[in-house]
Length: 112
Image (cartoon, rainbow, N blue to C red; front, side, top):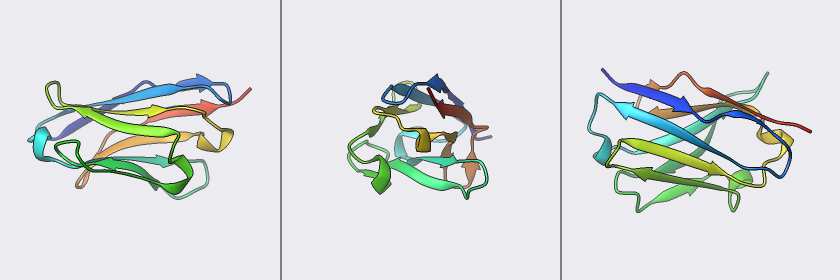
């Protein structure tokens, strides 16, 4: 079955960087669009970024453009989210998604 396993979250100071990883299995990764979402406490889950199967097309939520980069390595079935210039409002649980499948999430906390 489809499995998505996120890692790389943690506590970082404002202005810092983190790279999240999502290891995928159980489906044809190289032809699947992959997405990152996040959910902050008390808020709805929101889309953050997406990338098509070949990595040729990428999209970002407005508030993370120019700070976050989504990329993938189809050789090892992994999608990554590089996050720079992190802000306290980026604090959330970050989830990997494809179609109707979700990972368990990884917590990102931006705080001094």
